[in-house]
Length: 152
Image (cartoon, rainbow, N blue to C red; front, side):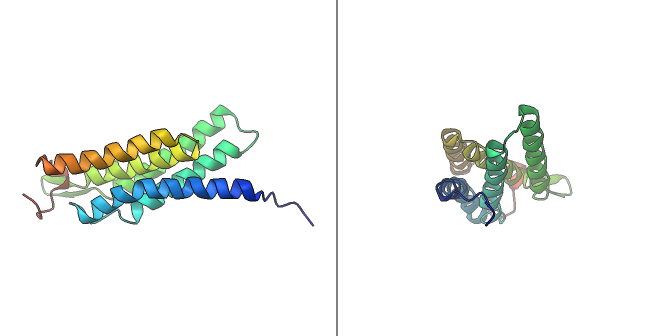
């Protein structure tokens, strides 16, 4: 029987990392869904999970050079930027969705950090993003970039 490379200890560790990335982005997605924008509840956690998956692939692939890792990471960052760009809408002289787009990009960074074994960075990114969204909203600091008419 051919060796398929299954190591259940590794699989469980990788599942835990993917779930952590998902969990750290979920509150941000919830805020974007129930806060000022309607995008994100499913999108942000999936972006974090996918970015974590790519980071796990480049972190565990051998032999992988730093240059190869950088190219994969550059592709992930570009792809996440493309997804975030889809959240940005220009209506007349106003632009909506910039904060959501930035949160999508941050969700990708959360996933990459978890995938590369830097959960501490992922936690800081998640908490800072979420606190920033809540705090600035509570203080009434709203830019035109996310104004959707539902809040003053």
